[in-house]
Image 1 (tube, helix red, strand yellow):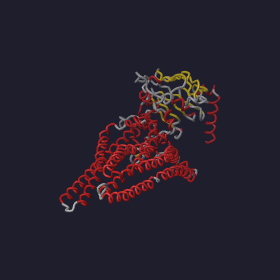
Image 2 (cartoon, one colour; image 1 turned 90 degrees about the vertical axis):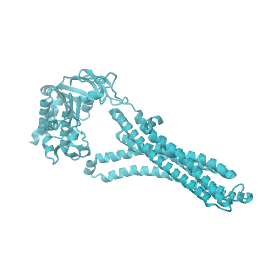
Image 3 (cartoon, rainbow, N blue to C red; image 1 turned 180 degrees about the vertical axis):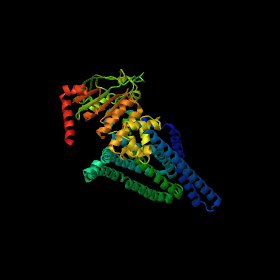
Image 4 (tube, rainbow, N blue to C red; image 1 turned 180 degrees about the horizontal axis):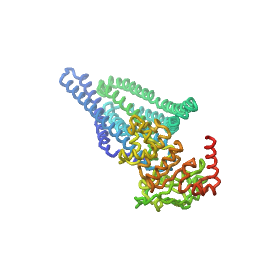
Length: 582
């Protein structure tokens, strides 16, 4: 897990090393400052005829050491910020790149909201942990060691107080951190549910407002937020015990040094312990106890981030369920499609197949319509063509070759899918359309939009093709969005075009004009049209009627009207409904 995290440091190894170097220098200098201060106090106390040059020399030395310590700390802070920020950027990019390789099966395993949490909250936690490790986790133990050594040198028997206080404080701080760990671990798992509630609410805002369910959503979000608040409060309440525990040890050390030190100084006449030694002991005592508290905080933060590290590591370790084979094919000959004895289920643990016993042969350039009720696996069937999923049983062939023999980018570059809920990205209309072909000219874009019946409404916008699309395409209607997505697919000039109920939001006349444009613009492209309306597929070369994951019947419109009861029933219901409307 740690190796996977550290692999993202890469070009930021130098600032990481410099941070450690300057932190070591800062710790060494700070450890000697109380020693020099004690020497100055002893000189003032024991010398009858004070020389200002000596005092000035001590003063200049202390100022120089303080400035050097400040400089080292400042440089370390800069290099630490650069190293930790760069590390988190690389880690976030590595996780995002890994997610881009995932198949739908991998995405389903983690869930979208969980992946968002890992890319944001979890990586932020790891960044803070990395910052603590290369700075505070180096400085605290070094300062602890240096201060204990210097306290022993300066205080002699007085340093024995640390033999009692250090184990006591260490045990107390570890106990506090250990008690806080379960609460912190629980919090990060609950962030997924909180983000899921936010995403679901934002995406479904129109439905929420349409059913006046704002109060219900507020209540649901409040429960998730309160749950996290309770866990954080419980953890922070435990961690807050660090402060009184620290103060007890600081004041106990102060009382011990002042009381025992004064007695030793009086009894020995300043030979064993003097005022300078006592001053240094108080400073070193404070430093030692502070460093112990810092170590306990590091322990808590590392504990918090360990859960985040584990979650990030899970993503980085996840291999895509779908990969390109060695010596993969890099060219798709044509748009022919063959399903040979294909059955499919979404999970090995699933009890039943979503598709079963599919045998289908489509020649390149055909127009194929697919009809069927909700849950008949129409979309599942077409998702096997660009290998969004792999067939569980049997073989899917495109261009005469098993889809598993192709390079994934090559195969998916030859297939364009337009979904009922296709997504437009934030940016201009022109930028969205060029997702289909980044080298498309303005003339190509206008032609594709004319064929998709989108040019007229795009031209009516004040900025035309430079009109800005909001995230998710919320500033255009459902029908406009579908037509823009169809135009985007046409610019790709694919060998196979799949329309998954993607004209459901347009009227029948516009639907017919779009299909007519397909015949003239991409005659050699295989066109697969999933639809609810018979009119959308009536003129197709082949129509599939699907039921419960199987092909119940196939043929032309005329053939199905005489041989398939399901098709006859759908046709009769829709045409009768049309007559009633008239």
